[in-house]
Image (cartoon, rainbow, N blue to C red; front, side, top):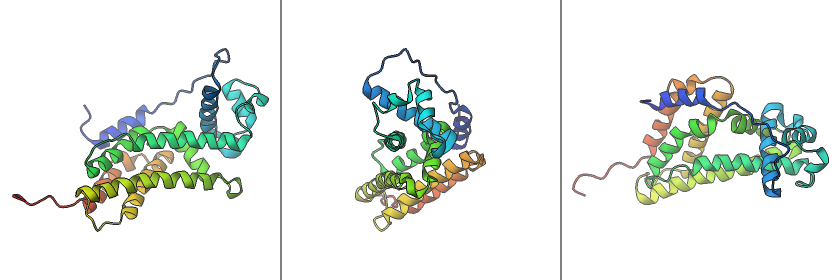
Length: 227
């Protein structure tokens, strides 16, 4: 049994999936299923080859169809890349929706401690393509599109903090945006640490202590006995 978040972090880093599935061209898929398959393959390719190296030829080969067949499902390469970003955002939002704890502080804690196992551990499907999209050249408009998606994730954190202020678990005077940026920034640092092989940031407990510090700073004091 794993006794601490540090041990859980180490476990999930070692247990992250690395096996790629090979598409079976004999399988008939609906249009919606094929679009998802193309988006998934594109996301993997972006993580492996970067945005410039994710060519339509590579995407078509990865899904087992011809190049021209791609355009039965998407108008152009940019649309395919945006579909991959949408898929990436869905995975991030799945993490943000993974806790339904009614106590806002505990919900933020569960999201923070669960980030490694749900997002940071998925190197090929989330972390690598995330940073490749962020690093895309400005003229591609992909970094701008990623910015819009990151703002949507930031708003989720803001909403949770605002909820905590209303329920009395988070101090009313705290700046919700500052807290949201702090928590999202911590998740980004975890992502970067794993991408760069700096796993000790998680396994030695530094990120967990940072999370505890942020939550400790914003938590409302417990009600006095008898009130």
